[in-house]
Image 1 (spheres, rainbow, N blue to C red):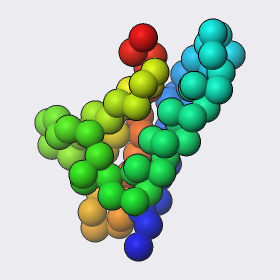
Image 2 (tube, rainbow, N blue to C red):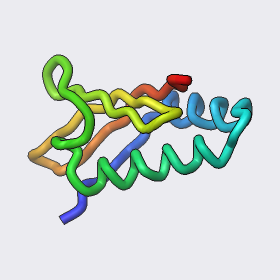
Image 3 (cartoon, one colour):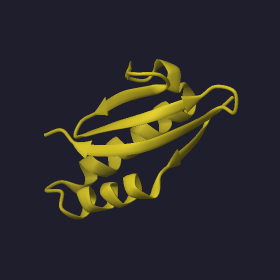
Image 4 (cartoon, rainbow, N blue to C red):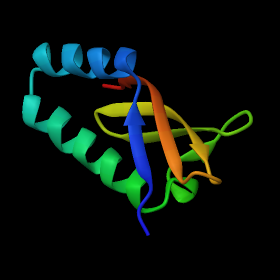
Length: 84
């Protein structure tokens, strides 16, 4: 069963800015798509844990911070940045 992935508006805006300014937009698109797929399938095994429900997941050239709510099977992406 898939999980629901929600990107906060601030994270969506940052992702848009990263894409617009990227030297390789396809790499940003592919990383964002892979992040979404990983988080939809099993966010508790994606990346590494941080404080509380927060996790970090890296798919070059992007990294995201997200929270997992197992009770509602939802994932909230609240930060994204370029790592390269």
